[in-house]
Amino acid sequence: MDNTNLIMLAVGGAAVLAVVIGLLKISKVEVDAKRKGGPNDDPLNLDDLDGEGESVFDHLKESTEAELKYDYRASLRALEKAYDTAPENPTVMFKLGKVLSHLGETERAIGFFKDLIQSNPNDIKPHLELAKLHTKQGNFTEAERFADSAIKVDPNHESALKMQALVLTKKDDPEASKEVFQKLMTQFPQNPAYQKQYAQQLKRQKRWEEALQFYGELATQHPANRTEYDLECALIHFESRDFEQSVEKFRAVLESNGANALEERDGLKESYAASLSNMGAQLQTRGDLDQAEHLYREALNYDDKNPDIFFNYGKILVDTNKLAEAKEYFGKAIDVNPNDSESLYEMGRIYDKSNDLDQALDFYQRCLAANSQFGQAAFGVGTIYGVMGELEKSVEYLKKTINLEPSNVDAVYNLAVCYERMDEKNKAVKLYRKVLQMDNKHEDARNNLLNLKTELGIS
Image (cartoon, rainbow, N blue to C red):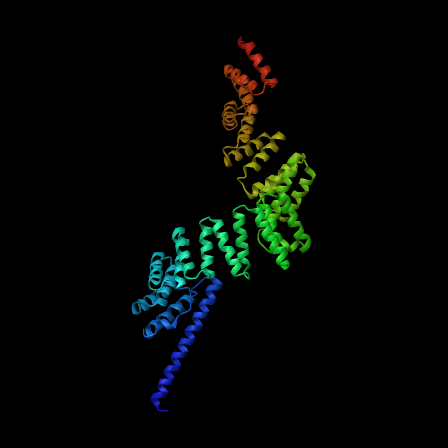
């Protein structure tokens, strides 16, 4: 072999090494993208580069190396050089579209993907990218168009079906989305995500019984996953406000799998606690205070940060006249949410009952600051101002109460008393009469009206 041949072999070996290195790097980008959602996940198609010179490959290699560092600007510069050399190369055009998408230059990216479809309508990748970009823009009509065109290229393509289902979900069309997920389940039964998405569409349509039946069938088919499906059923009962059934399902899971069963997924403990609390509220309404209190205490074991549970427990403590404890739990609810108007009002009531009018007034006013339409808080402020002798302020808040709650007979009566004390007795007479129209058994109003009529000499 002569020296010329040796030199050619050496150069050829270097070229092969460069290709191998390039492919290895592209493969690494592909893995990184799947793991991190990072650089392009499309391997370099070397067949597209035939006859276009070494520089195109070099620019693509430079682009890939930049993407590995998440330096998309540098990647774009390299790809633009490649594009100048080979403006119709599909690999270059596709990678340009992807990098521009990463950089937020959406319209330029769309242009490249559309050009690719025009040159090769049967390449499914640009159809999917356009559907993805239009979905991000919120342009669901265009997103659906390109998702459908991808399906036409390959009706059984998993990514195309997923994109179609995503677009339909974004368009708030759960029935159509459910049908696509049903197809995905049939074609790719090994992927449990499609089962969950199918059930999710049933839940979005509030087809609770169908969703429960679906998970029941899955539990029969896959007994090893029964715990997961039972938890899904517990959550469906919770969302459908069947709290008793939700608690029953959660307890069955805990009994079978131990306390750690609710630790494996975020939100399970909180959902169980909320089910317990809401079930407690239902029992409290029925007058079963002991059982309701037991449920609230159990709920607090699973979620000690939910202001609704603190509030519900505080209410039952008020009902059982444990005011000091009630104040503690309403205070915890307010610590979590300082604008919790219901808890602020209940704190005002507790101080009102204890005759601590300054504190009661403060909480009623904070309640109104959080919710200006809270009529009972306005009534509390007006009544306390009346007791304190600040009659003009009392009149202001009692009028506000009546505007918010026209049927509040106590507010009308207290306003009449204020006017009588302010020596505006004709106004008081009208209001006492109004009270008796609202409640003809209101003896205080009847007696006050009789005294005023005698005093004013009117019939």
